Amino acid sequence: VQLQASGGGLVQAGGSLRLSCVAQRTILSSFSVADMGWYRQAPGKQRELVAIIHGNGDTNYADSAKGRFTISRNSAKKTVSLQMNSLNPGDTAVYYCYMLRDGTPYWGQGTLVTVSS
Image 1: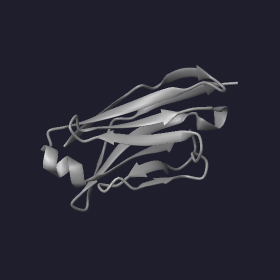
Image 2: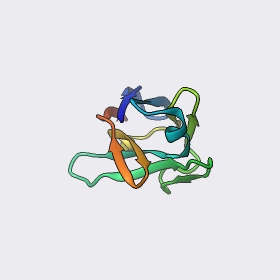
Image 3: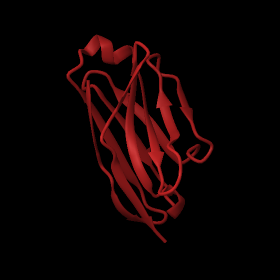
Image 4: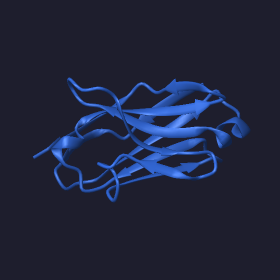
């Protein structure tokens, strides 16, 4: 499995970004039941969960993301997206796409999000 993330960049506070991640080298049926999510790691901090969407469509969000971020998946395209609104400098981090399949975690390469004040 290879996860390819994109969509990061520089945005002003209050702005929006949409991150996308495509799962490569995995069959559709395997992707459809996997948990997909986004983690982030800010400089000097531990990696933390931002949002996750389970194979059944249920979602979980970090408190910091609730009401501002929306995670979604397109199983036909094997993609997971994270729509981020009302961004603030505290959201600055490298964002990592994540997949949990059959108990095995997979990580994307990370995409940098920088929010200027």
